[in-house]
Image (cartoon, rainbow, N blue to C red; front, side, top):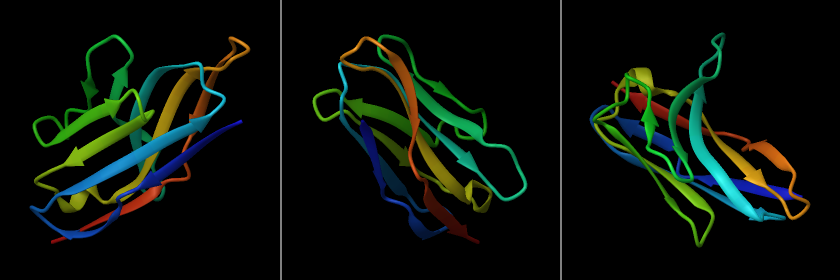
Length: 120
């Protein structure tokens, strides 16, 4: 069993900043990749940023230069620092974790989501 706990969402004015966190715990042998996605009503969930275990970061074009993804491998936690926020960044943000458990099974988990609202 694996649990993902997200935090850091909220209401902020345009131009402001927020930092999202997602901590993974449970039966985890190795985390392969961690990332953030977002979704607005009526639209498909879209990639915001991903961070593979040994690879380079990947960002949506709309957030490049404003958002930074990072991870703490000791705490199994991924962060999303969001700066210069725009009203169009308003969405529910979901954490995603790709991991290998102690049975050497590769699994993928989603967090419950955290609301980010940017006012103009």
